[in-house]
Amino acid sequence: MKRNILFASIALGAVFFMGSCKSKTSAYRAAYEKAQEKEVNNPVADDDVVIYTPPVQEEVAVYTPTQTEKITAVNTEDADGLKKYSVVIYSFRNKTNANAAKEEMVKHGYRVIIAQNEDGMYRVIVASYDDKASAVAKRDEVKAKYAPRFDDIWILERMY
Image (cartoon, rainbow, N blue to C red; front, top):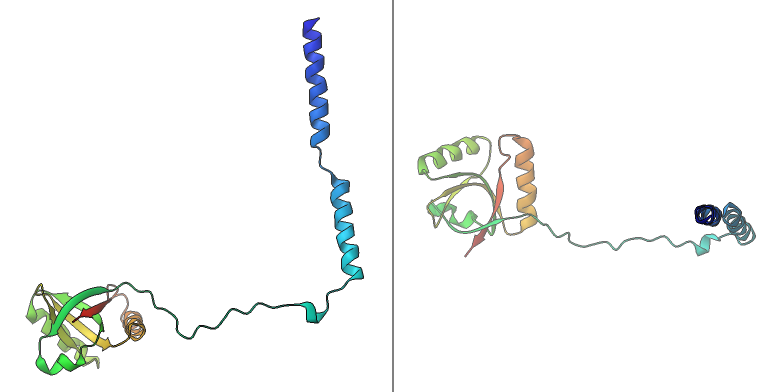
């Protein structure tokens, strides 16, 4: 008897549960039809449409990681050519290797500067600018022109 009551209770609970969880298609249909009717009766005028236009930025911030170093030009005549941001294509411990790389890039039409940091590394620089955006643009140009040769080209930010 207890077993029949338990079984009947479970069955009744299942029927109630299944009945209350079924989707309310008719309710969704009624809401959809009401929205359609409202749209037909109140069409949107062209004056009511607002198109969002994002504000135009004057200057786009350039996020490119840089390495900051205190450098000096190896040749005094190149000192005026060193600016705040430089495009470095090679780094050497040996000055002879840096000079060979400079000669090679001069043949390609670049005004190359060799600079030395405080740790004695020679940086072979193909361009130097006062603004970061110009340095990034030149880096990307050189990287694309000589790919994959200069995939590790980078921007040096000069400390004074």
